[in-house]
Image (cartoon, rainbow, N blue to C red):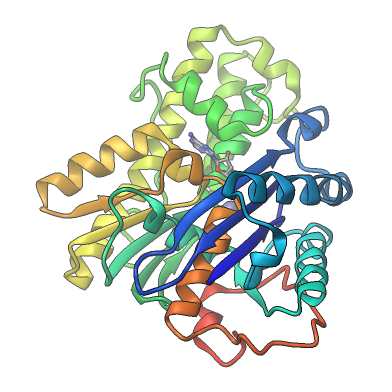
Length: 362
Ligand code: KG4
Ligand code: ZN
């Protein structure tokens, strides 16, 4: 069974083809990605309308590239999957409209996929796929969640952020340091030159006894520190000139200390969830899962506790089509995909809790 998948929830257009025949993990036959980062950079963040228009421009050429990689015609496709949510409504509509139109033309079923389910299952495409059950730490630009995963479609929410996501904390701290968009990778790069113990930033809810996170306070603490180093008035506005007053070494110290605070909380809460569940496997997914410090700290801590940590391959940590086609393949194999879904009327779900997948709503 060949499944073509589309991802268009935010600023990456991803297309991929998987073979989900048999019972083994679906095999990736081809995938192509276009990142809009350069286009949005001039605005310091994602401009939704520009994102939608660019998805429209990219999606069919990327599909051609994927089919060429797999050396297969479009007519060989047995089902078409797309990201149904959560994400930017206009951007989601491009992928869902394309998928449904293509499926209709082919007379094949469509499968709407939850974006976070894609991230969550993406380590199954790695050389070292996990086994169920496991704890999943989902850390992206919009979400920070700890889940217990017992199988495909069986996701129990243990805790989540009550305000900013971990990726947002990276991005906002980066912005205060005058780093471009997307801030996470830029902050991580700068942090390599700095001292993680230069400043003590807050680690909220570290000992709250639950699995929730809070990152909104970090940007205030980073701003306060940047102002202090820039000799600016504490009550003054946050302007780009603040970061310009800092030396490279000062910026690197703030970056390293902010990264340490975020990573510390993610590691401690993941360990607590593992301990409470008694599980010995952890899956880390989403864009922040690409962070080197997070990976090394988790590997060390889990190594000491005999816990195996699984990550998606680095290039599949951020948004991509492969994880959407894969999630659809795993759903088909688990008998969870409605392959009779016709006649291609489609909707998108810009806001869509992952835990809702367990309900009839999915
Ligand atoms: O999963 P993703 O590509 O998109 C969403 O679904 O949100 O995650 C994007 C987020 C951004 O906040 C980005 O700054 C962050 O992941 N990110 C990183 C790194 N690479 C991406 N954060 C820290 N370190 C990185 N190396
Ligand atoms: Zn994502």
